[in-house]
Image 1 (cartoon, rainbow, N blue to C red):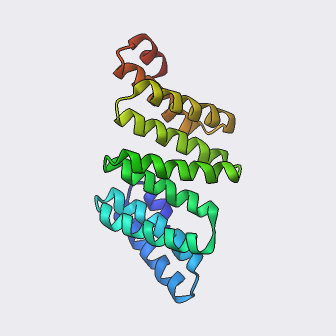
Image 2 (cartoon, rainbow, N blue to C red; image 1 turned 45 degrees about the horizontal axis):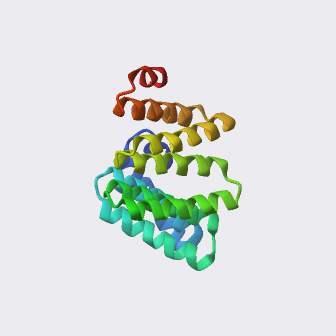
Length: 178
């Protein structure tokens, strides 16, 4: 239920259900689900403007997954860390973690994860006002999401491509994509 409320933007209700789930996972000594739940709860705290709490939960999940070698989940951890550092304007650290996530997604053939990282790399470059390079990564994400038929993500990719053109003053191309 936490995920449903999260997807609806009802973060307080999501947090309540994630905490209930966490108690069950802790009681049953299910460390893997506890760590997964921490990653989901970290997203909630981030959107509730509590980045320190979010980072603490991500770091705990990171410790568990590095200890157990659960690389698929580690890719998610690194992606969330990259996102957190980007929003904190620590772009070099964000780039570092996104590339760690990318390598793991590629290793496991996770095309959706690769597309997500490409989008995030573009976002980092856009924040740094390197719009041409940002557009390169947004385009790569769009190619993957188009092949995956992930229309929701593809719309976001195309909008970001258009936005990068707009920020460069290339309005004809901007209008085409947005």
